[in-house]
Length: 447
Ligand SMILES: CC(=O)CC(=O)SCCNC(=O)CCNC(=O)[C@H](O)C(C)(C)COP(=O)(O)OP(=O)(O)OC[C@H]1O[C@@H](n2cnc3c(N)ncnc32)[C@H](O)[C@@H]1OP(=O)(O)O
Image (tube, rainbow, N blue to C red; front, side, top):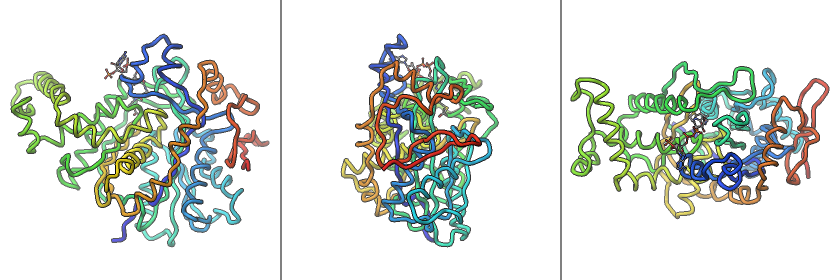
């Protein structure tokens, strides 16, 4: 069976940076450590006044096409995953295709375009759609572009304000991929939940504490479902484990539970037994509360072991580096985690070819998905092409007052974007260019 997977990726961050410890925490009267240690975040990315989900997505897709030498005819599908759409009918993918058509001779008239919605898991679902389209033999040798793009803003004063972010990831899906092959095996954990939603409103209604518990519960179900088709997973099976990362502290919680699950009935559990005992089993307890207390106590001890710390440093920490600097990109977040982990491996000189990633996606509402990826021989060349560091370093650092301004600029109710103050100067990129006669957003390419 021909391998199908991710051939290439590109990333586009919003051009503004809010320092959470130095700028946001003092303005909020909070300790900087809540951000840097508690949530694990140092900064958030925000779009400048001329940026939005379309420009970030189109700029990422443009660089992807240029780098891979693609013309519009080579692309049979453009799917956009977003939680930040500004139109209930016209998909963002048509806007992005329209932008790209400004800079290419050809067009995307024969490409299937769509928009996927299921909170943050929609990016992974769009990759699934592309995978299935190729596997079904309907692609006519063409590739799919998936764009995960979001401006993850919360209402001012909402606890989620600490975890905001904005950026896009563009992924090229095709046969014989250069980056990773996707496993046909998948696991799902899906339930009707009311943890985070946007009922016809821009900013989310969110029950933050509950959303953390729902994330963990659905992720656990997805792991169990994945194991039912893949077989039991053990820590040494996977070199890196990128998770959906609303903030790194969330991943710390998920990783600890994941490690506990993966080590049950393994030599690792046995080796740790002398130090912290064996994992409590429910059948050994008369009531559920006693079991919960015992497993919670075991988990606390597990977290403090050297075995866990080493696994975490090797397998999880590399996935969080970019997230710490950009915040939550919703649909793009798990794909940022994958990029971060491969970039760290490249910089450490690791040979990942043939090694496996276990990828955990999550969307509120709620659904988790787990699948495996096998790293392909072309991965080093692909990751070496990324300009993530340059983008992060060149962001304009905003003051708290400038943050208040830019939050208003991107608030759909304030209608101030068209003539808002800009902090950076666009160059060789798509920019927002005001509204048309039917309320559509317009874009142009700046040389
Ligand atoms: C949105 C998605 O993308 C989908 C999902 O993944 S849902 C799961 C994640 N949910 C979200 O991201 C929702 C949006 N975020 C939020 O609502 C909030 O940011 C939040 C609920 C996550 C946290 O809100 P909060 O109540 O203001 O923070 P709080 O719980 O007090 O502090 C956060 C952490 O920092 C720690 N902390 C606080 N002050 C600290 C300090 N001075 N030093 C060290 N740590 C500190 C806290 O102990 C806490 O850690 P634990 O969870 O391990 O206890």
